Length: 167
Image (cartoon, rainbow, N blue to C red; front, side, top):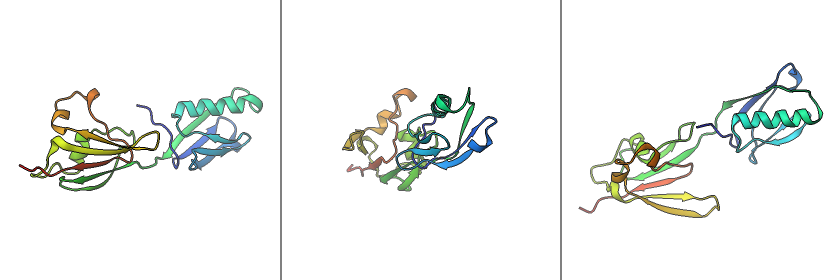
């Protein structure tokens, strides 16, 4: 999976044989940077290759002939999720840089279920693309039987609650 640039990522950008165009910048809250000659450019939502292509295109329009641009992420924005309830170490956790973590991996990072946990009735609260909160019910016991492609993946900002079993 290719890393997608996000607001607050720190990047270093260089243009071959154009030392005056080398910059280090942090993406603003709107995902943009200010680049010499071309001004404000939104890089958030693009992978590294797409960001390079965008800068090459903009520099090539009016300023340089066949520019060669290199974009490097020097600091990734941390993405978090929260795991509450009947796990050994409830709290906030970081998603890996590549952003992929299954529900079972998240529970494992929290030390596993407590002995009174009910893994069949996990609740995940997630803010969707339309900014509305949705509640998803997940059965971790069934997740253990699924293939990696069918697993439930954690997303940034998820709040996962593992309830107590009522025997």
